[in-house]
Length: 320
Image (cartoon, rainbow, N blue to C red; front, side, top):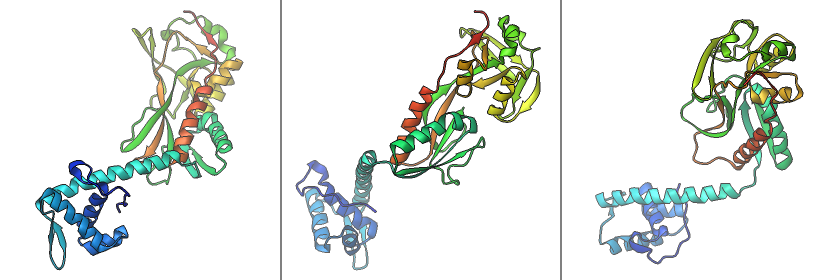
């Protein structure tokens, strides 16, 4: 239902004023002056008078009046479509302004991958609750891609490469994939100069990834090398892979956000730092909607800050 706008009754150029457009649209959509007046909360006489002024100014019949129904003429129908579009745009502007000034409140329901959720999203949730005590957060940490439309979820954090359609997304960061090893393998990996030398080393595969054994390395954006690793351990969670590597099981490829602290403290070391693996994006994904609640916008803004602060120093082994 269209809202009523309090504008002056004087003419604003050839379009007439916004109030009379709202009166005319209400008549067309309800099919009568009486129903339009009830919708707008004014008298039937005012509606009839204002629509008559439109017809008089443009010297065009906009409506065909019968005892049973009011219908637009051909010119009236074309005018109605333009007026309805203008009024909806005005409503959107007012709604967006109201949302931008609203204080975050209510329960925010979100989902995130388990590893990124534990390392980055949970700290953001704590900071969010401290800043906005009127909010509550209901978070689902899962490596499964939950359906936002059927799961009553307002926000999903996706790590990697987006494949979903029909949703809105905002990129909040990127991550690098790093080849890492336990300190116990420091001597073995320190002599490595090329990805082709990796094939015979023990490897822990992350089966949560679609292609977990074949890795494409690049150097200086010109030299490329694909390597197929031979794994003896297969695990289906990033944090489990990380722990296996820390325990000395072998090499693996892990996202930087999951291992920044481990690299900084020496529990893991980066292998072949001069060679790069494909980077990925971190996105906030929303159900398709015209506006997002203040609580969603505020949390995504805060999450972007926390994500940036989670990057740590790298301890690398290998030769340039």
